[in-house]
Length: 239
Image (cartoon, rainbow, N blue to C red; front, side, top):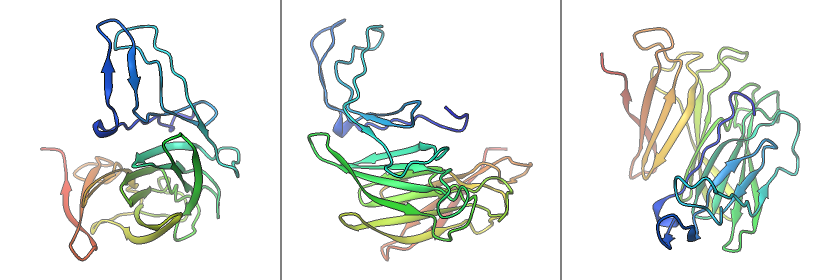
């Protein structure tokens, strides 16, 4: 895997009932939807026959692999993963569409029988090169946040951005916001990491100059009753 690639797993307690048959024995059932990234940039879902912690006989059986039908070399599909309520968002942040390393996000929808189909591909709104759209993704319900931090100071320069999409129908996602911080500076790589819960969006800008070069900062955005996302806080390390 590339050094920048990351294997991320999400399994909320609501979707992960686990029944034990006794200490040292295997689970009766694991119904969690777990994600992992293989060296072929494919994603497997639903681990079965998983042993308890500490048991070296853990056996992983992916039931399905998700691939991009238009895959190209160095797309880095699976660089970022978000999963919620039968939807999966996969970032391919190095895909050159429409321009070099613009990045894309694929969205799959599944059913209870582990049948998954791709129904959307999102591209960076400004259609510029080196945006790395999809470097980070966060998904909750019908809201998707996509980080596009850019790649340091490659041309065209950018401070980075986070684009927020709303699902308005099957396979239909509408961009409702493109966020940058009030004190944005070029090469901050805002959007390097994102987290979303309810009406709160947290965004990392790991190269922001906050008291020292590339010290980093975290910005908090809040969605108001009018549906508009506004910057509400900036988090810095304690002095």
